[in-house]
Image 1 (cartoon, one colour):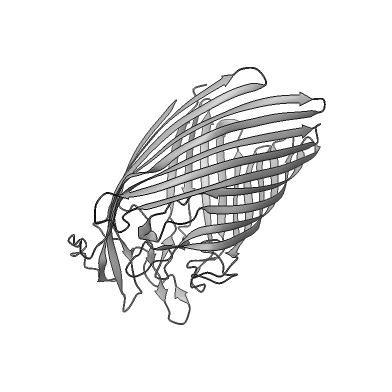
Image 2 (cartoon, rainbow, N blue to C red):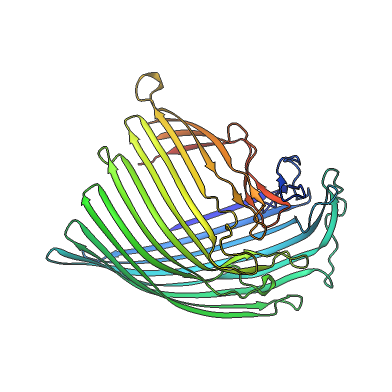
Length: 470
């Protein structure tokens, strides 16, 4: 059994971004405004309480048959107030809306499955079958958004930060919601000797969503939707040797929308995807160094995308289709005293159809084409510095579109350097991580508007102490 509880109190619950200057000629200046000029106000706050409990029962009937049951319950409560932009910058001033949210979310999940192994000559089967029942949603979703007020960016006056409650003009969500997701599946992994393995899997999912208003001020006044789907998965693995394998897979997915209320434009149809993948995996130097290459194509349907309006900053819309094509490479492991962790990903994520918020071929929002990372760590094993490890590395992210509708709002590429050091002795390990050691000014991505972008973390560090009991 596992039980967790966490309480967090922060100045900001969400990152609402820092200001970006529109030059008026289709370009943007990400360095015009000081990075300490954020959208939010001193009165903003965020409080979150997260708790979870997991109970696992595993029973081995024989060497060939096992049963498992997992019961998990999660409860998340958060309460925050903040400001977000709701217009363009004019004469170094901006319109902002005020929001307040009191939210109580739950997730109760039961998973039960059985595994049975069977051999017939050179052919062996590993059968897996089970079912899932998941009820999730919220007991309370009390959200208020007030009309805009204008404020100076360079010389802000926060005296009118919190406007008085006005039910006649404020936007409200005040409801509860649950989703019942029931699924069952069967899977057979077949081994043909030592060199070939196949996987066949079929899953059925059915979900029912119901949202009920808690007061008359709720803009939705009730939502209900039902969906179901068969989800297949097929895989093939070829092992020319014990340390090298090649594989191919096909699978489909189905999932209800996590944001589905009428106040955001819902209910929305469920998300679906279809994926093809080919890859290679190899272990070398006595399996101390692992390499991986994967090529994939994923077609997504019914993807939610922000589509804010002046009257409803929470408005969303469904993107009928996007396509993601890419390559991933990873090398990780040890070569004598050197630890290596490096990876590269190329991802071309674009709209595969024309919709109300973009044309076919548009780059999808916050999807850089190139991401790379490397961390090299050298461990000292002799002398008075025995147990000391020193590492250095970095992260690279290419430019990315910050707003789907305006493809010219491009978040600049970034390179961030990191370093670390640790000391390990017997059962203790003390580790120090330094992130963004050059204090680079960079951005994580866009926030659906061309007025703001998400600023990356400045130089920061983390210290951790680990003790191994066994």
